[in-house]
Length: 598
Image (tube, rainbow, N blue to C red; front, side):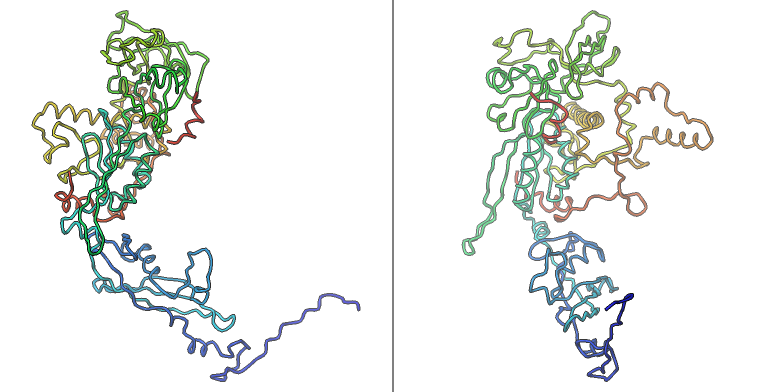
């Protein structure tokens, strides 16, 4: 049989009468019209309509069973999530699949808050759900869920109100050095990774910081983070606070004492002769610079551009100190520089003739083989170590184990810009700070002045004014030098959030300069506020581009800036007031891509 063209048959749907009201409708499995089906089938009948929310008025957090407390604003997305998790009878759409228990449950389509009187302690949520009834018939209905808000203090606020210690674990982090640049770097990494959300209190100490945690697991996670960031050694202690023999329960305080290796980036190290110089380092050095510190210590030989590393476990088996630290560097003037062909990463070998910047023209000069041959020019200033004028006490040097040709009188570290101090006040960026308190509960900062009595007193005044002023200057130098390293080192900026300053936070000269430039662009001339020589000096200094800066979120009229939320309990001010008397006393792969080791 020959078929010409398409023969299409229209589908025929028989008509029937509704079994309840008798209305003529299209045939369906229920044999009911939509109005009768909606009246006789209630898909929201299995959904519970009333719930109780536990709210802590002190820290403004809601309880998520069984024992988690989360902060959420009124009628916010976070609060809606907390409310929806409490509803029973709705299919879990966040899971990976649908099991048999959730197959017959209604599916959530929409959810929104309904208006309720703010002081009624009632939260109303309107739900729209869908459910399949009978066979292949989907019904959509809306219902209203009511939440009764009950006020109850969270366990952390209860401890604050009753004067009990609100911490279960404490990490005492120490580093026996004369500066706090290591802790300044850790502070920025903690802020970027949001690890401070697990802290209940941070207390400043002369040689480090004390971190307090509400749970032991949070402290152990932070210890793992510290092992990745620096070579540390650990000692544990447990203190029994209370014991209930009837219920067989006890309250214990866990204290972890961690010491960071007293070797920092830029320090000059004399490798021990027997253990490292002859064995693990393969004859590199013996005078080496510390290039990088993470879970291992990376050393760099400025004479040969060879690099090697010592793992943290190997270092702590036979620890050794730095020969000289960055606080003991001198300023040199470059007289001549002859680059060589040998390079390693960003470094290039060269012969540099230098003299002390205070002895120019006096004939006291040194010819140094340095790794800065590619960036130094005659007339530049460079920071380095002068060993001939130092009275160094070292066992290997005293015994004469190293040959004289293996040692050198001058070791150059990095280039120095004379206008660096003036440039610091013109920076357009800033760093955030952790909320740190003293043992007396007063607010302080990471680089707070240190004096013989420990931390500064509540009035910031020491009985020995001269000693206190010296420590204050050292603290300011630590922060200034750390910010300088951020500008020079791009690898260091990967682990740090840099925020752009608001106009009110900028230096008055910078604001006036920007206003003159904007006016000059409008009227067709250049605005002049800073001398031409100062501008040329600032161009040589490495600067952070605007693309690397983050804009800080503004709230309200712009006078306040948004701070990162902390979901661990009350603010540090509340903790300090409530517990001051209760408290007792970069990774390896990225580096190997830039610098050859071995």
